[in-house]
Length: 411
Image 1 (cartoon, rainbow, N blue to C red):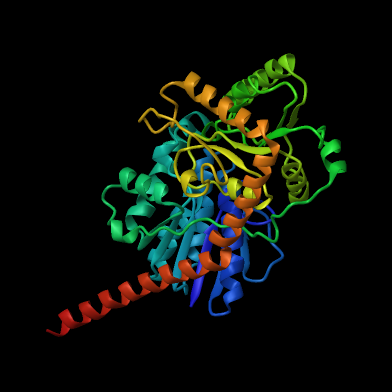
Image 2 (tube, rainbow, N blue to C red; image 1 turned 90 degrees about the horizontal axis):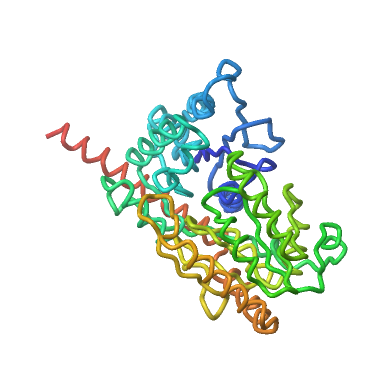
């Protein structure tokens, strides 16, 4: 069986959870030895067998970014001929998967890492490109042989956003974690290099500066934490100048009120991120939209308890009272995920974080339980097997259709 996996992100160019998922899924499938995995990704050439990268088309250099993406998608689609399964990840690759599957006569499988209807704030980032990206996603989802949801919460969002989909074609296969790659690293020198005191309690955030990650809510909550608590923000790649300016303003306010506020805007090597997590007391995930949240699994694998919003797929990862705390949120039903009462959400987040840092021994016990859960419930080997089962199901369904059509033709 040949499977063409299409993704904008692929090592070394990874900036989000979808890219982590693709890299680990490819490795898990290749390790099986019974499938030919061809990776088709965006960007500069990769020095990896079975992996082809596709640059932006120079003819579209001045076009809207969404149209630039479509130029890459069309180039990729041509190379999918000969595939048995075409599997795309995120809207960036969905059009390539949709067209490539049609060209190859192969089932197109989509893994849903996020949904355009659930991220309307992207209109401020992409302008009319948001309508273009939404078109690509809708066409791909409604034409797919299967749409894999990374959580049960995500599955509900998919069926609500695209009600014409057959629920039987929307299986759940959770994201995973490489627990050997993500495990505690005690390195006080790395912490001090970045301005963190490894001997003080710390609340740590790792993520992009985007509306869905809820960083401004965390920064407002951080002002209410005990004075001895550090706030470590590994936060970069802002979506827009507006949210960058908002975060920088909140950062200035926070630093005016307390010390121990560390902001690291650049993307760090994984080992350094792990060192910061290992030295922390609790991980904060204030997201208002999160299909699953690989970042929570990464923190748990580093033996760190998690304080996270009870939204999307997060409650399927974080067990309150066992591996962390879930912060309740009532959200506006306009797709933005905005809290109905932002002040209450900020207050509840501050209370949960204060609870977490007030008893470091309890936090440590929860961190150990979190690693145990990550190792036992979210291995990539298991996720690779479940993904292969989806491939086999859609191939079996296609063969049944072909057989049925053949019988109808002979009758």
